Length: 280
Ligand code: MG
Image (cartoon, rainbow, N blue to C red; front, side, top):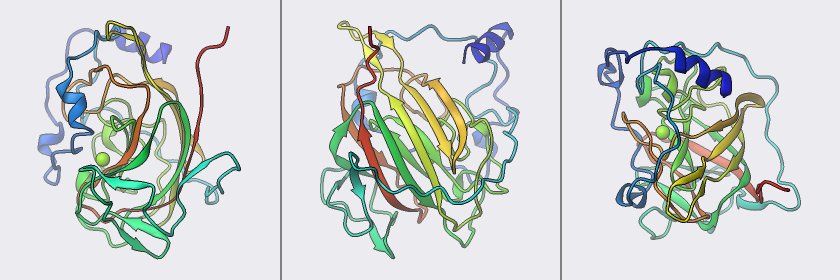
């Protein structure tokens, strides 16, 4: 990260907005707002921002190299995990509207079906998360319109879900990207229809009493067992085609999954709440 920031810092000026999402024929407004709460609150005093080398969704940003993952990386829940979905029911989830979650249950998976995003009943801060997902085997659309969903930590910080197997989109919006912020180090995507996994270690942001950011949210992500982010600081809550900003929020918030209109499936979801407070 330091190296990344230092590199960015050397770059002068801004690149023009050419080639961003608006040029993608299939690009939809993405993502659906993580939470209205984030937008309603005043922005926190932001951490020092680098001089931007890349525009948000810059099509000129280099695409991460492709790495074919090894064997499937499904991991059974350890004894101290909270199982959020074991293939049988949606009892741990509600719709983002607060009503009963209405995603379809199909062969031990839950599937996006146009009824809106869902979120966990329980709220979480620091955590280790395992989640498996699959984009539709039958490929339809391209770019952001192909197998789009998302894993929103604390309802705000998105790790993108997308069919990024031989599917070009802006680098900061492909599978495993911190959407609109950082591409994954490599593209470890499997083929459409195949099960994939994210293993995520998330450290929530810390805010000062006045709402300013003391420590940004940080995340480490493995995509299909391949490291794609190491302790990367989120720039703020996920937004679309804007620079992310922080707004103060509680220490715990639900995990949410995005309905972006594509029938993406999820299974084997478990979480281990952690306390990643710095120790003396
Ligand atoms: Mg998404």
